Image (cartoon, rainbow, N blue to C red; front, side, top):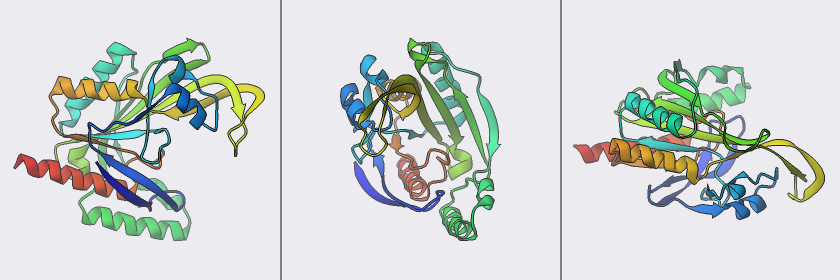
Length: 257
């Protein structure tokens, strides 16, 4: 397990944070009750009621999303992953498109655009392409259903590593939203207040991780890793995380030679 300090350059603001490359055998979890205490925004008890374990990032807080690097062909990963999720919890149709994550940056301030330009130059220097790559996406059906207002939905983005890195691999971005009605919390202290309302929480649990582990077993994927993105909206554009993924891809690919 390698621990990194990341300075995130490609974001809507400059954020000092930590990111993680983790050995596939080093999943760290907290139980549902501990998660309820850590979740200061909303009283989400789905993991607790469903007896799930919540994936923990290096900061000790619950992971809100995760990216898996799988050294396996993109199209096969898309088809097999959709089949697994469709069979277990249901899934909507796959949507495939060409993606340019740079296009939206032109709307930022002059200083922000200058910062992004430097980051993109570094991406190109390391042969990382986020300006034109193949991507598939789909959402699961509702699962973890407790009542009509309390359930989970998993969203996936799957990027073709051949386009992004020039190597036969796949990136799988997973982001789960829990919808529930519960006690709202005071923003700064996380103390519950006597008002109930509808809300959402982002979380990744052993339920979602196990889907990837099933996929790896089904496809006999030997080399894989996972990373915690720091910006959910531009998950393939976080500079230092993508540089670390590039390094990991090269290490795995070198082992094949």
